[in-house]
Amino acid sequence: MVNWILPFAFALATGVLSAWGVGGGTLLLVCMTLFLGVDHRTAQAVNLLFFLPTAGAGLYFHRKNGFLDKDVWRQAALPGAAASLAASLLAAAVDVSLLRKPFGIFLLYSGGSMLWSARKKT
Image (cartoon, rainbow, N blue to C red):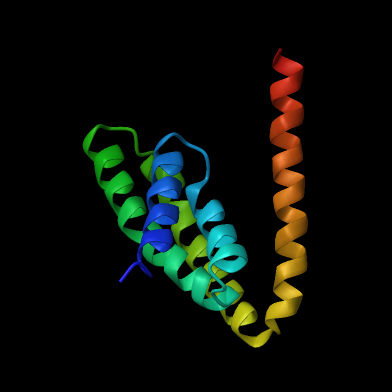
């Protein structure tokens, strides 16, 4: 009966942090893999399911409010889609343990750079 409380709490917390601009998708991946025991590939799929509606809504409202640079969008859409497809095929072919280490290094690097830039501003 209470098996849903912890996943719900993590989803709610990462959603709120994402709304504040803190990269909630990355936090959701970390929570699912470290605390909930979800396989890395499954966590990536769930993260993508969280991201797609948000990205679609953002694209719609940016276009509606005139914030979408159509020339940049046209230039970036096809290469971005091709790179995403290639990366997902590569991720499906690679052993999960090989994905965790670079992802952890990326998280440490991005967190450190955020802390370093915040420290420089103060």
